[in-house]
Length: 78
Image 1: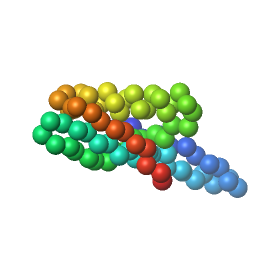
Image 2: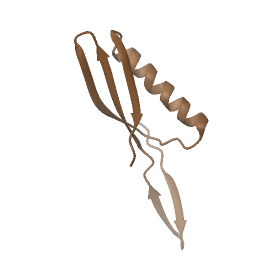
Image 3: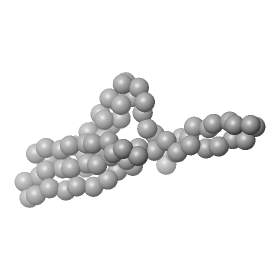
Image 4: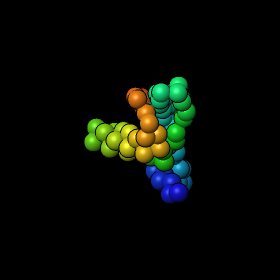
């Protein structure tokens, strides 16, 4: 798994900032519902990036839970 990090240079010292994003995912199936957290290695900042990340998570849920009736993906504040 690759992790991306942004660096801030201050007075010649490089400080690494964490750019992970944690999502709460709730999947409803006929037998009940499942709720869990998923951490992605990057935190998108642009509208296009946010849409792309949401699409990636939606496709992941649909692949892992093919019998879903509904699901909700929520970005948690950090």
